[in-house]
Image 1 (cartoon, chains in turn blue, orange):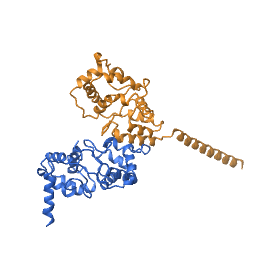
Image 2: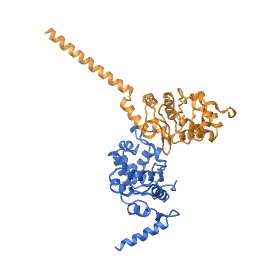
Image 3: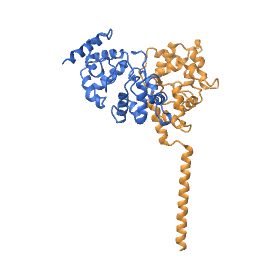
Image 4: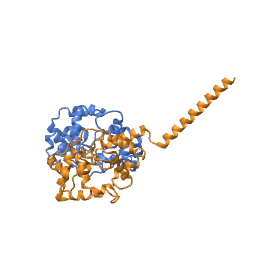
Length: 203
Length: 216
């Protein structure tokens, strides 16, 4: 009982300092329970700060319609997104995308070089496409294509593994890409990306 | 006994003949290199970026439509990436992973596809684009696009199809033409576009892109 008011106070401060968007009018407080008070992600919940607004809208719709169907989404996000009206979704996306993202830097630093090579060049002889073609040279994403730079190692690895297991089949071309990646290549990519620092957010 | 010997000898001869023929077939495969499976796997790889029906895809970079493209154009561009006549870091890597014997088959594979245009383009200046495409801009020394690319924008031989090409790809590629295309000098067929690109305004480029991007 003692911890609860403290965390609410921290929450109130973080929301009050968030900027011109009136965060307290949005459902941001619910997101913070898993994604962290500054949306930098926590444990299995990914960082949302600095994520592309169009991508966030797209994914929230996909949770609500149950198109995005990997395990943790069905358990948490289907419920969380079920009752959001379209305006709230757009406001949330605008708010989150404007928060400055921080790099998780929790991958294996010895795999950075290998991951970077795959990200920038693909592996042409193995028919693995270059990630940068869609996600951008600094993994910054664009429109409905997510920013990957600085997401946590665990989240990146899990997503690539889940596509390989047939989840989230609508997210073309990622299921095809993930099927072509070996576990070592997934580890290298997730490690590299976790260290990628982002340029200013909100574009 | 003679009959038995004869039968054994014939069976032996047949066996040797079949073994040799099979060996030759394998040698043939090795010489050709790419199997139908290799080519299909490579095509699937192309569609990772260029879209499931090769209709193009707007990622961070714009991946052009390949569907329905002239096979000779596709072949020429893949060679151009390898020979640095066309400078594109992503496609230079991709082209190095494609063996030369795959190139004609891949060009035919994408030529046979006919998905609808990618869409999403603005359409405020379609009429201007149509006019420039059909008749050029004589006062600006811009020839009619249709003269080479065909009245239906389907292209011919090494001259590309523009019909259904992505709006953003058209705008981008005409904006950076001199730094990416025609690096082989005047003998490079892409060189021919240089004066035309220089004589078009940005608004005219956008109008042309709007027009051709909606053509089927």
